[in-house]
Image 1 (cartoon, rainbow, N blue to C red):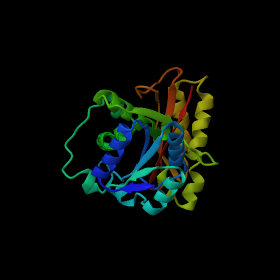
Image 2 (image 1 turned 90 degrees about the vertical axis):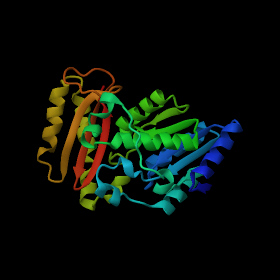
Image 3 (image 1 turned 135 degrees about the vertical axis):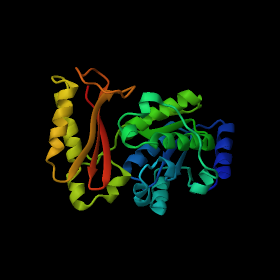
Length: 279
């Protein structure tokens, strides 16, 4: 497996692959890899001639400096995991390599970026769009793979590809879960044993919400989920939203097909997100 730290090296490799007619599947990550990331790499391996990945903790998508500082960094282990999963090349740039100048670019995603994560993490999705666009320009992939745990991010990236007319196919991948239902996340590494034991409650509540969807309104289910967290001793609900799968706008009445429940919860100072298709 090749490891490149510079844009020139990565772009040269990617350009050569494209000129030779080979398809490339690309998995962008921020490191601290887990089985969820590896499932994306394996799918890319099945669907493409070559597989590339990136490991870059993108500072401009963190609205909380403390969160950026504490984000786990495990490069050596990550590289071993990517190699064992069948990755051909990994791009590991520095912040200076990716952003030699101040970032001025501002994207416009309308209402898609102002709800849920966009409402609680101002500037987050612009930072995501900037880095993803740059990575696509550098890695020139045929297909790029993103997990559905970050569902709103996935919709933003689809909108980015459409608006910028980028020649890459976006492949959504199902949420990867631990045996107890907790959605796999790099942030799970920071959970204390007590918080880790409590965290599967999030998915349990989502499943209960799903079971109510056919016979209750969205407003009733939001109220139900809110109450489930009111007296929890360890987990604090930041938001629960029932929204349309495509435009992510909130639903309050009867729940129709292609509607999801989206949740963000604090386990101590660790912020966890998850979602579930209700109908």
